[in-house]
Length: 638
Image (cartoon, rainbow, N blue to C red; front, side, top):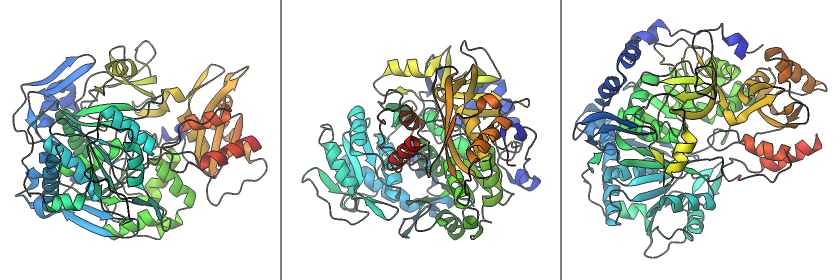
C-alpha cells in the first residue's frame, strides 16, 4: 500500500539535525516577527535588495489595490547583476546551459552583466524606452534570461510567451500587450525536432501592427526569412553595442512584466507585476524555501514562459547570486535518464520540478534514476499542482535517496512568489501537504460567505508584496475574478488537518458534487495513483440524472503494469476504501497519456469536452495535441 490522504496524517518527516544546523532559517523567529507586525516584517525583508532611494511608506492598501514600498526607487536587473560586481560572485558561474543535442555553455555573472548591458543598449537603439512593451518568444536558452534582464534594465515591460504556443496565441498576447518589439529565435529543438519559431512569429506579426522591430537569436542555424528594415540578428546587434548601459531608476510600483495566464472565458488574462514588491517576494522566498547557499548548483526545470521561470530562474536565483542549470530539451531525449544524467554531470544540489514530471518518471520506472549518481542532491522541490503522497514518497526515496527534504510549494502566476511551503530547516513534512503559509502570508480557508472553515476555499486575507497589481487593460476583470469578501480568492480548494497543515485540493471549478458530497478532483486522483499499478490519473465530473454529477477517471498505467480483466473494478474499490463508496468513479478509461501543457498541468476541461461530446477547446498549449484523438477514440470504444 502506498501513501494516501488518510495514512499521511500520521506520517511526519522531520528535518535532519545536520540540515537544520546549516539552514538559512533554523527556527520560528521569522513567523513570530511577521505575526507581530506584518508591515514592519516586510520592510525588514525588503532590505535584502539594493535601493537607489528608500521608500516613504511600506504599504498603501485601498482594497483591492495595493502599493508596496511607496516612493522607493530600484532596478530589478541591478539587483540581479550589478550588485554582484566587485564581489566574489562576479567571477562565479551564473548560468550553466545544455542544449538538447548536448551543446554546453557556461556564463559567469561578469559575462552575463556584459551581455545584458550590450543588449540593453541595442534595445535602446531600436527605440525601446521605459514603459514600452517587449514580447519574448524564445526557447530555454541563455538569451531568454538576457532578454528579460535587459528589458528590466532599461525599464521596458517584458511579456514572455512560451515557445510552445502557436502563432495565434502569440498574436493574441502581443495585441493585448501592444508590444512594440519582439525577440525570437530562428527556431528551437524538442525531442530532436525543429520548432520553427521565426516562421510562427512571422505568421503572428501579420496581425500585430504595433511591433516595429524583431530581434532574432541564431540558435538552430536553419535558414529563415528576414524582413528588411524590421528584422535584426541578435549577435549583430550586441556586437555593435557599447558594453555599459546605466540601469533605469524604477519606482517600486513601475511595471516589471505582464504574464498571460489561462482564463475560464478562453481569453488569456495579462497578469501585471511591478518591480519592488515582486522582487522582494522572489528574492526572499528563494532564500527561505530553497535554503540558497553560495555552493549550490540549482535547477528549476520550468520554462521562462511560465511564472516559475520568472521568479525561480530569472529573478530569485540571480538576485541571490546562485549558480543554476538551464536545459532546453525534454526529459526523455535521447533516453529517459536525461534529467538524472544532467544532475550527475553538473553536481546539481537542488531540483525543483512538477508533480506531473515526477509521476511520469514513476511510470518509466526507478531503474532510470538508479543508473545515475544523484548523491549531490540535498533538497527537492515540487511546483505546479498538488503532489499526491505516493509521488512524494517515490520522489523522496528514488531521487532524494531518503535524505533530501521536499519543499512542496503552492503559489500562482498571480501571487508572484511562493505562498505556502515548508521551510526545510524548520518544517516537519507530511507527504502530500504544502504544510503552512510562509512568514507574512495570511492564508485562510473559508466558506461561500467568507467564514473560517477547515475545508473550503483558499483565500489570502491580507496584501503581500509580490501580489498581482491588476489584469492588463481590464480592471473590472481583476476585481471580479480575484476579490471576494475583501480577500484574494485563489480559485483553489484546501483543507486543514488536526495539526493545522494545509492540503491543497485543486481548482474549485474542478470540484465534483456527487449526491451532495463535494469532492476535489485531487482527492480522487490521489486515491487512484495510490494504487501500485497507476502512474497518473485525472478525474472529471459529467452530468448524472440522479446523482447530479458522476465521476469519470482517465488513468495511465505504470510502464510494467498489465491490466487484467476486473482491474477497473479493483480500482473503483480502492478509491472506495480510501475515500468512501460515494467517490467511486462511474467509469475508468485506461489511456497512454493525459492531455498536459508543456509546463505539466493536466487540461481537465479537454477531458470534459470529450466526455460530454463537445468539440475540444483550444489545444495549442498541449505538449502533444495528438493525445486528444487517442483519448477520444478510447473513450468512445469503452
